[in-house]
Length: 317
Image (cartoon, rainbow, N blue to C red; front, top):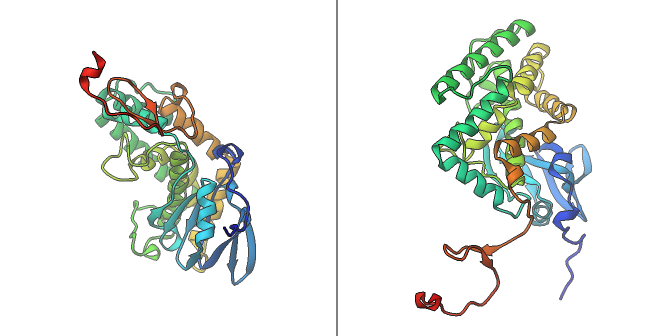
């Protein structure tokens, strides 16, 4: 048998921890291949090598050609791959994440399927935004109203601080350039935050679709989770970039670079891992990287890979 060239597939224990990885990398108009344990990126400026195991999420924009071998490496190292539109505005597809365990996912499903536990998790999210207030008795309607007031106040405050005129959040998903500079910056910043949130959620084994505040969308929990960091990270950056930019600047690129730096400086990935575990009561979940069992309604978990004999109900008697 012909030996496949390149480095061997790494064990899960050999890979970098999610909290220690680079937040995200956005690429467009480039050719991606693999050389051993690195992704090669070739564009009109030359060739660079990117260690796949040290990236949380790789955002692939228009004009990217990627080989099967490169995708194989990204899958083996648990790097989330997002295919996005121009300047990262829309997400079209994604790849498999790091964990092979469903424990956190099962915990999330239980929490979101019970009204009381779902409201409790939602209140945790809002409590993180209002650390000096007690929201434990507020209804979801009251929480939404309180959060709406907070966000409107943040937009007004940053408009005053930056000198950037603000008339509301308006953008066209089909036309990035149609928005005002600050709305363009907000779109680019939020998309980067969504990508990183998605990567952390999936890498730890949770579902991006099982939201507690947002619902009915395959990225509902991503929107829940990302909302925890917008006021601190993406909104200030967007207004700052809009204030400093002129008509000839690539606002999308400038914003992504600023957001990337803020993710690193603020250790956002480490915080996201900690926050996600807190929200989903992950301390109660046993961490297992690769365990496959068979479910039984009476006997509990049974071993996988066993040839079981035919069973009849009266065998228990």
